[in-house]
Image (cartoon, rainbow, N blue to C red; front, side):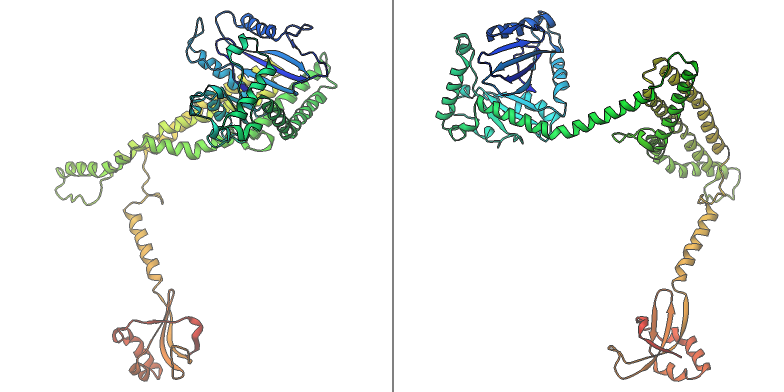
Length: 543
């Protein structure tokens, strides 16, 4: 694609196909002028302008319908170009006010295709950072993988400036690089300067310019033709396998569809009924697969069907609840409790106000429960809309039978909307049930009793860690930290540690069973020292 054109003279797409020919005479042919050969290229230019006026009118409008032009010459390489109009910033003549957006949309229709190369043409005497061509190419090709930069009007740059950094691909680099060219000026065109003389002048310019002479062999129109031909060939070779696979997949799909109608007899009523039942049954199967997220009906590009409904339930619904219920409302519970306590104290002087009154608690909680209605009903609407979208996707297979497709979609959509009303009634009923009675005896409710019970459970768990599993005298053999042979120690084994204590008097008194019991009773009071921690694999003997 060539992002280039004269906005005031060419507002139509030109599809130019250059074909190398053995015929010495160069000529051109238009698709809208079949059989007519143009040997004078001034007439070709006039015919392009005339065809543009015939299609777009005299108001300088635009048209996405391309002008097909073939050029046969022994001096060209096989190449196909699509010349797109330049973007018009300000409407001229009878052009519509949104002419810029129209041209932009038309350009995007072509350059968004992954199989095309984008030829971004930018004048050298303008700021490259403000190039419309490079900006549009960047939008559709952010990595610069299929964009080729062309810098024109290098001979018109201000004195002392050059585009060397751009042509060397140092500024705004592109993977396929830049090529500089010097085209004929309007004066050269009016003076009938031919293409051959223009190319010689272009070659002389690059060879004589100090900033470009070292890259002169990679500049100019002839080199641009070779680059485009080579890049197009390589691009076709790279994209052809995927393109072939895509076509084969479409062919197999069409063949499978044709096979289903091979023995189809339009006038057979039984055949019609059977075909109708098969299509309706297939619609039901496709709908079920999209909801379950199985089979070939899964959309890998975006969430849809059952996957989107799952997200609505598990992400959107909680988000709507949090958004609808203000967190500060829970802090109002204490204020409401104090207010009701003050009112109750007028009737009962013995009211201490230690606990939150039930009336205050229920007043706050019920208000918050009622706020669940909005998010719940909104979730029902979202699920209903996704179900209808799923129905529309499933009816695409019935496109060959428009009336059947329309009627199937209408019946199923009406049924979904009927169930929507009943679903909302059930949701509101469920919320009203929750509002009517606050069950404080539920195990998930942290009331005074449950809070006390949980506190005791936590305390019990903390004491389990210090519970003594076994205790008694142990003889420890000679180890690195204990010199002097085997010694006896009083060991205490708990769930969290193994401790031993050393006391000469206790060891002497604990020679018998009664002494051991006495030592056990007096151990904690008589030994204030920090216990030692010992790995269990050093235990040798348990007495």
